[in-house]
Image (cartoon, rainbow, N blue to C red; front, side, top):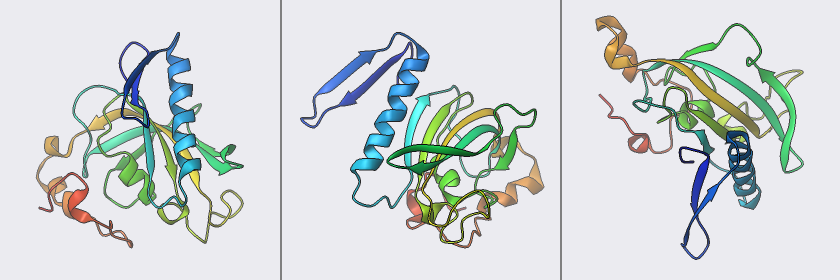
Length: 189
């Protein structure tokens, strides 16, 4: 995803292509379809697929940063977007979360790293990184792959927070630790 409705990509011959779309919506819709195609071409989805839709501005978010997020969540059904199971887009309240605190599904924690304020990202999250075999009664069937469009509306960087808040940066005590802790972009201080 590039500014001014451009997207660039490499084809299977490693040749670089740029496409200019007639509108932001057309560029975003194309990017979503690329991510869905990536998912459908994976023999087994074992990590979060991320596709930026809008890049946003400023510094990329890291563990410990506080965010306010607008989102929509779909079930991944029949190789594409199924029904919406959750959204706060048309509501007054944004979701507030501290990245790395374990308060949201692991797929969000990983998939939102590096996003910037005003950025929008498309996430396809396998069951193991979402609600797993238990699902969510009445909303998410067991072993569901989930799709989210997330937009960061506000960011408070952990580095800007005062003293006692700084401790929570290292409290990544979620039940399932990251498979490769050193690759998640921040030090283990």
